[in-house]
Length: 181
Image (cartoon, rainbow, N blue to C red; front, side, top):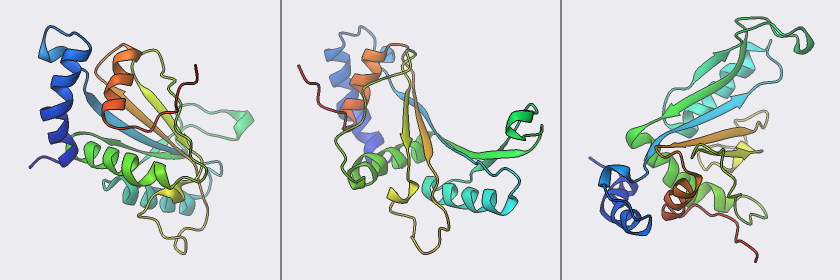
């Protein structure tokens, strides 16, 4: 069973992008490959805090999150190799489209003084979005969360062109800032 946004992509967005981007082959149409949610932790020695963050990120993503470990020791940050330094989850397929729909329609509009997100891409057709307060997600309850953390959301696309990736995300109704001429 397909998700509503996935079905909308196949039936409406794909043909429109083929025409507007003047692509010769349907396989050239940009598509979403994965969405990665990442939360870094400052107090790396607190295993209870990382467990709580893992639980919250799993609730936001509707998928189990994993702990990320440090690869190298860094004396300046008091980090040793193998220490837990954050939590991440990679969304693909149905879960990816469910999260994107929730992000566009519920989460981003609930951000205070929201005027749109930047149109700046990474040069490889991928988009990074930083959220400073994870309490904007509707699944979270203020009473159950002790501390507020930020979150990085990376949207990976199949294209290497920033213009095509921007056209793809605009077709998903991502609320980008209005360009001032």
